[in-house]
Length: 217
Image 1: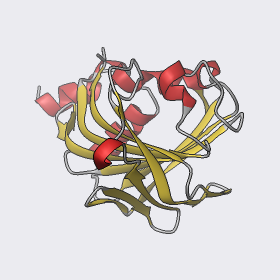
Image 2: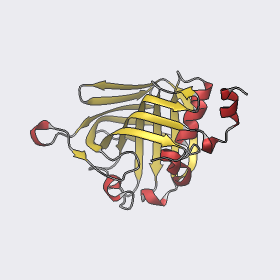
Image 3: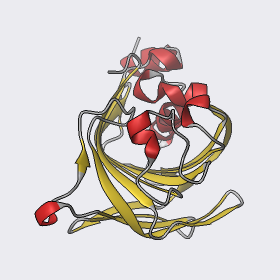
């Protein structure tokens, strides 16, 4: 039996996968997101969370499928405490992804593939949908930009600390990764799935990610 056939027959929650790259996120919190420090036990500053996120996959695979070089955009909506669930989520998958890569990324970002993102399967009560789209993730100087057509148009920059160095919250147990760079949005606009959000000047995060499944880290 060919290896590809074996992977196709493997249950989704048993397919090995990994992603290394960078994640950026911009939400409606007026100051740095309390969820990072409290691990979701403290409410967002506005009492609820609305956010967009971008993932740049530098290296990655899902089963035998190489997903390196692809980008993903997410829209997230959380009604209260992050840890209490009832999230809504939607995904934009890089239009360059072939069918196997597309399906693998959907499994990863819905939590079906288990591992690091398995919590999505527990916390997301409504997956609004997934679409192929031109997802662009750019870095220019210290700025990061995510563009998903006119659906998501975002740019974030680190908040400078002493002597201009980045401010980084280190050694956390946050699900995305242990080190989170404090940032802010110079542009944060979402026009997607009936949501119209503008988060310019609001809280943002930068995180180097090293995710695996199905067991996770």
